Length: 107
Image 1 (cartoon, rainbow, N blue to C red):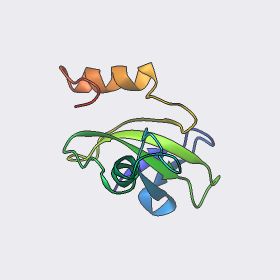
Image 2: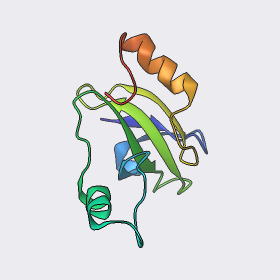
Image 3: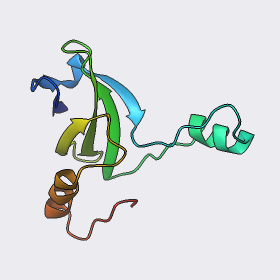
Image 4: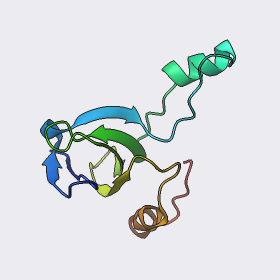
């Protein structure tokens, strides 16, 4: 079972206590943008085998949103961090590279 630590309250929670929110770090599109941009935002999502950044909500805890870096193939968690950042923090990137030599963001 996937277990994540909420960076807000510090509780280590199983996925049954959390609500998934999809891919993290997406550029939002809406009114005033092209139909193609909005379509890509709404429907085009990465589905990688490997490192992935996701949004999660601590639904049965503090209720706050946070982001997680994990491997979709092994469920290995590289870390969690608050949702109010525009890119993964450097300690998370370092943790990924320590366990996945040669990994580069955007892969």
